[in-house]
Image 1 (cartoon, rainbow, N blue to C red):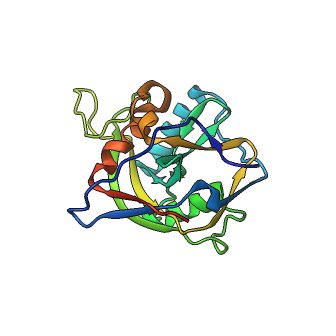
Image 2 (image 1 turned 60 degrees about the horizontal axis):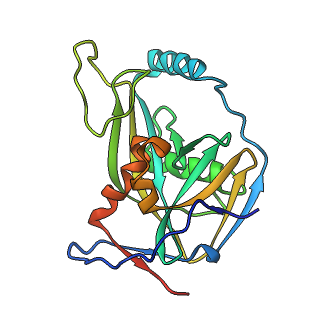
Length: 218
């Protein structure tokens, strides 16, 4: 089972590295892709998800999620790795933190669960870098925002999602649950498709603008 390329792109371009931030990315062909047992989803419908969020908020307070921005090279252009769930919606690899869990430990756990052969993380090391963005949801049924809106009926945000840049080594095994697809999507396509990928994913190219992306020839 191989990763799927969502679309072809034109050649990328080099950028300056004035701030010293460089991200080396390697060809998609350097990586191995396989599959494992399905992950059972907790929510069957949007209504189920909202009810679960309300219940968890009452028990634990603010829901914090961590998600990974992972880049590879394909067609001489940076591509973003996305998970497609149920052949419908797209998401960055990651998920919700456990109570008291740190951002880095939680993201590594989620990456191992979604993208590694085992969930304990012993077989795969993840190089989690800095947080590059934060989004908040001020109500259970509304969209996420890259700022904290203050409508009259919302006193506190209900959910916070933090994006972290995860750098890949030259080679890696990606083992994805059978009920998910791992896609390599051109950054340009993500930026132009808010309706398809949602506000968080479509905002990733702008968040990466402060980095110099270096395509490594193998």
